[in-house]
Picture (cartoon, rainbow, N blue to C red):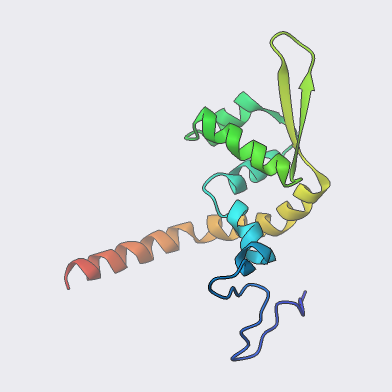
Amino acid sequence: MENNNLRRSAGDDDGPWNARPGTADAEKCPVRNVLDRLGDQWSLLVILQLHAGPARFNALKRTIGDISQRMLAVTLRHLERDGLVSRKVFPTNPPQVEYTLTELGRTLFERVGALAEWATENHTTIRRARKTFDAAAAQR
């Protein structure tokens, strides 16, 4: 799958992800704008968890493990704002809330799921490379 919008030639400074100093170009950049959300520590983990199906807040918190309640709430709110996650409140006492991926969120998972698989497959190799690099850097 080739995207002609991403093809660039050498010296092309007008690509969709370039920003001129002193302008609002960075805010208009689709790559920067989306990666700003997805590049945080938690968003992709939430998306990966919700791919399995709807989940309640506490179930997400338990599954992810080391995320604080506040950060999970903020992350879910941002993902909902971006149209990637939907929130359903059940009229119980106390209210129960369930989160699920939207259609847009599922299309995102199709792409980041491959990245998650790659990370899992290469995690040991990357950790070994880091260890080798750090050992060499310590001897310099």
